[in-house]
Figure 1: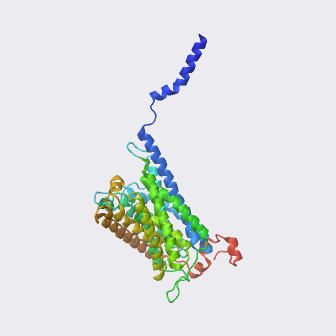
Figure 2 (figure 1 turned 30 degrees about the horizontal axis):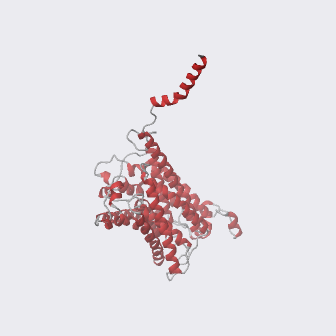
Figure 3 (figure 1 turned 90 degrees about the horizontal axis):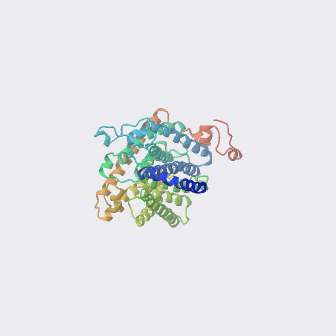
Length: 459
């Protein structure tokens, strides 16, 4: 009898978890989806934020040793400052929705000093906290692109001032127009992950800075010919491209902001094809024109392919992703050559990689967007090559012109005012000895610079 009772008790203990779960059905499918979405968006945000490591290595490797510490340090500083400014006002201008019906087409109002609910609310697909971090990472990338036009000659104070204005106003307004329900979104502008919003905006700010700061000492001769100022470390630049390439999967695939049926995997797939096309095309054209396979051009080609596919990664077929990347790789080489001829000093190739490729990538949507994918994830129409007519191409062109012009004009005005009040450029002596020493009091490579006969005392 006792033995039978013990056996019965054992059976009950074994069955108890099953009985308990039968009574409590556990998390609902909606809760589970929300958790998976939140996890994926946060991972994507981390990948995008880690792209700053790529930008540090890209700018450092593409410039001279005497500015290496400055490049690394100012990137960390500006990302930190941008985070505070975007939290205080930038996010509210980009995604705040409390403006009047007419005003909301042009700017968001609300969510300043962003103080969200700790958990997601009923009906939400993910917590707003995670969406904020994701969008902040995008704003920081656009800002880092802008720094290409400041490289090796701008005062540290200029980085501080421009970070505040760019992150508070310039970038958020453009983001609102396309991603925040603004007037370009109403027109049907399709920029899935930011060829215009992030890349063209940053490039136009870099263009304004390049014009006002003027070329680096020794870049151009009196007859207009250009001297090649080599970056000090091609291993850094190569590693930077790999880091940015990996981070781009957070950039593009993360923009799906859901796990859903796995569509973010398709976005990652087309992203890889676009990057590959850009790298191969740039290498081939540099080899053909120069007689040598130029490494910086090849690296810029990969980045240009990534920039170009960013607008259309969710809207195009695989073959079109390859074509978009191939054209971007050729374009980045030709545009870089053009800017040298017109005496524009672009040390990090921000204008050709992020500007020209950003324009092409945005326009490419108007050619290659498929009806099926537009219906699934878009807000506009199919592209010209799929029977959609020229309507979508016009909207994409409109986005490029308006956003590019606004970013350039706003950045130029801000920097012009700063130039008149406090100045933009370090002195000739400071530029020659390097920004590491003149702005920070020490070199990023103190031992190497000491062997070259430089001192590490402040100037």
